[in-house]
Image (tube, rainbow, N blue to C red; front, side, top):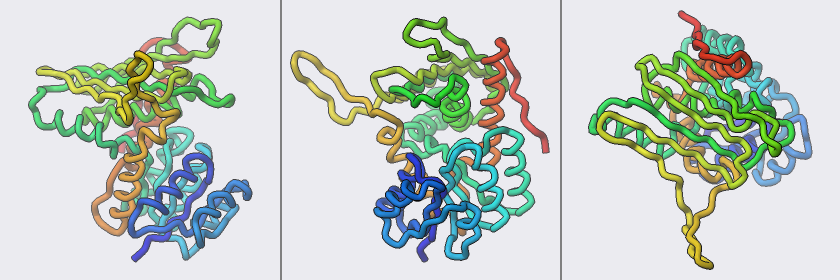
Length: 328
């Protein structure tokens, strides 16, 4: 049976998800696309034979010809779309964040629990990245002893004009918040955000330096640099009792020319995590109809957003902020 997927949002991520399904995912097809920008949706539809076009996401979700939904629309629309999928009993893969705020994430968690089965997966694709998976497996082997500290760097070449300083926390660092919990099998309990002094080239708070502590008393630091200039670069080093685990930058083609040795960095996150996106989408499709959910769930989406909100407070108020999570 072929899973008929509707993709909501045909911007950068939605278009990429649609192409990934068409080119790389078995037992699935893009049956519909939805975007208020008909021209943008039409460009993607031109690559996918038979995909129907919608302008109303709720109409796509309710359509009986759609079995599952990918939500890649603007952040503020996520909660409404995901809640509609839960009400319709349709599995949904929602791009991060699950919702614009923790309160709306909680509504999603509660709705899914009331439905009695897991329907929501959040698009924290790093959980499917081979390098992160190898680090997690090596740590789980016990050969390196207990994890003590985790160093992370998240560098982007540049950001669009609409990007604001707080989005470094709410839109970028959320990937670190989730992968830290997953790698260490621990919860983040407090967070501090430090800002460098402004310079002539950047009056915005960029880069940021984030320090966190887990409930296992592990220390985590994250450098978020959204205008690093040279390319997209993700780095992670895990310091353990008996050694370290380092995720080396991937090298696609090392170059030696004119007396130099170099290797190129991707211009953005898509080439770096292309394999993770493929694995995530196939795993989601394969999990539908089984009792074996995969990836980050609604609760993970809520936790990442709650950490981000604590990070925003730390950015604005200074000092160490406790991360508060709801209790059930």
